[in-house]
Image 1 (cartoon, rainbow, N blue to C red):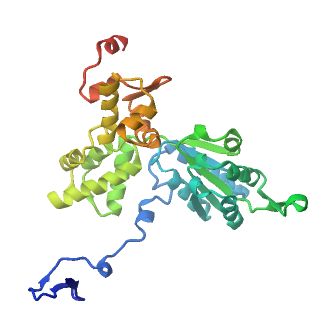
Image 2: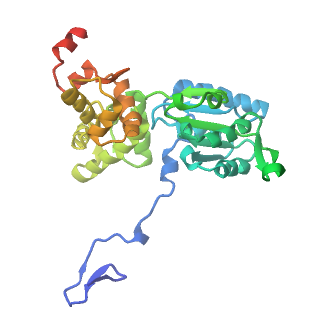
Length: 356
């Protein structure tokens, strides 16, 4: 039996020689509780990208302050990882109000959404992520809350049942979704401000990476930041994840500074190619080409063949593949585009070559 003593020495009860062990004790770990908060921008100036959206929001916020009224309800939609939650936090900070963050799947029962609405204070912001997944009951509770700032409640049973209309403080609801088309019309129409977040350019992502590197005390050259940005699929969340992985390689295998060569070599080892495609993305394209003659093929068939969830393919893989022009969505299913063939180094079928 081996026992760890207080001084970090392993002692064996069979009398073997004790030796030092480079173990990390819990009390020696300095956990930075502010990491996630520090990496998220707090102001429009530090929020990189989405320039048109920022300018519009600045005007909207300034107008709300002059009127001394809460902001209109807002809906942000677009692929995951583009900063919908972050922009909601920036809005709250600029308005000088608190923000309460939840997600639609967490609001299963009526009392869940009622409890949150009753706890809100005047001017506060309620952020609901994945709002397209709200169940019907929670959605209907939101209708009068968003429109009239009231909460309709029923008390009693049968003949003694009464309907109460409870007033709520004026608040701002910010909804975020990756599937705006799945929102019901009545809910979507109650948002006064609707914006789509766009994929980031390589230059914008390079700035995001340089900012994150500065916060995390990672040494990186401008060329190194651009190399990571090119493989980040136009998404800040992926860029922030990749810089941490590349910094591990730079620290262990190199001198700790990330330059272009180190970034490319590290990402090659992580199986992330120059388009930002990972193993799953390439497997999806190769499957359609090799097994289904380039498509079209249904999404359920693709998911079953890859042993992946349909939602994962739709929400994680497809948006960037479509945006990059590597995949096409047709009424009959998904097809690999000519660019997708070229990216994988495969020849176009003769009939497809004639077509394009």
